[in-house]
Image (cartoon, rainbow, N blue to C red):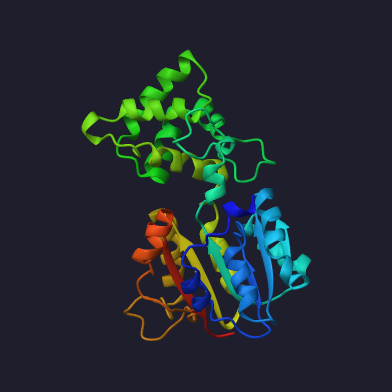
Length: 312
């Protein structure tokens, strides 16, 4: 199992971006197989790590991977958005670094029964990152009203043919339950005009439904603000995104927290009292190099944004 997890994206860039400090406490909110976490702990023998993941298999793989650093890490099976509770349980108040990697793991994609991939024809429509929950992609596809399905495909998948896909999906589900990835892929492909079809044309629809099932964008902005508030001065936050919706939210939060006064320009003096909390380390997002993309094609869409906490 652990072999599926250990290819972290932009590992060198992430570790360099975190600027590991002796005695520091680091939070990896999306452990996967702990490839990034392993490198954080290996970078300095005095650092400690707190890790979370919604996937029980990821937690098990991480425990095995991080065994050489026993006593220097604590892992929790929960959503990183529950960081307040996790840090309370770990007895930690402030952090030296935060890492969030929003990429779906290779293991989740490659394990057919998880139902994440449009390439797996017979796989069940599941897509849960946390399999202890009961809500699945099958529920979205078969029970959501057409207007809600359309909104999900347009907003989360940025799917230009959302209207046609939803129309055909609703027709199909009136005749039979849609229960496999292959059925959904077939509907999507048949709904898209032939000249726009490709081997990956169902990717946007699968992405949109996965985001809905796992609530990936819900409360993301507020969570980022909260985690940044936990950073010590000079602490770093590194975030890896894999589609424009996530990156847009990260960019917006970083920009907002990097601003001083936000009073109207015509005010003679500041009355808002806002002080900047964050300094972006990289202006434009860092992307994977050609060699990494060749070795790991899934890194092609990754963007890394890094920022440093300033002030108190």
